Length: 210
Image (cartoon, rainbow, N blue to C red; front, side, top):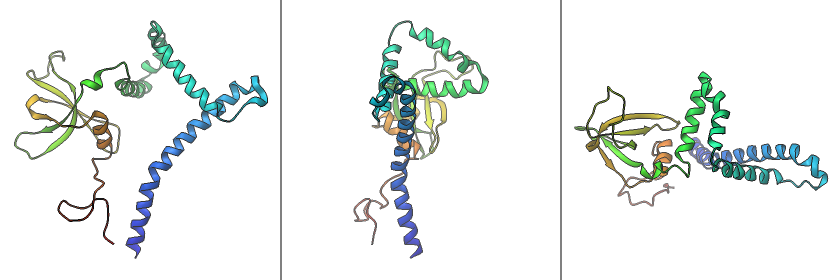
């Protein structure tokens, strides 16, 4: 009885946790934009302020920032703004990592379309590691790297943001039919299966015995 109650509890927790975290982050964003809107807009419009203008202000601000960053010459100005974030020792590492991650998915960056999700197979081992090819050749790498027909493969880690990049012969990797977004999402949660029944069990996947 206790085991069954525990299963019900954890099943409910797993169901509620993603929804709760999503709602929480949306609440934080809405609360921040509403506070900002009240400070910027309400002094000018007074009683005409309507709840929800903060969200509208936030969306508009992001849109205008995107338009601004699309103009020529703005990139140089952004470089000046980034100076404190790209020179302080600890802040530099955090900011550079987050910026590179955001730039990777930028619409103007076509690198995502060039990436290939692969299964890395080490010779002589029945082992597969899912990774992402981030470099198709090693010709322009600094001296000291092994040369030849080699590729760089990024191996994401589960349950955390991070991973390892390995340089391996091209014939060690085999492309798999998975998009970059699907592979990154699946790797984040260790490729956990939603089905608890083994093949051939005769039961419908996702259902448990009574």
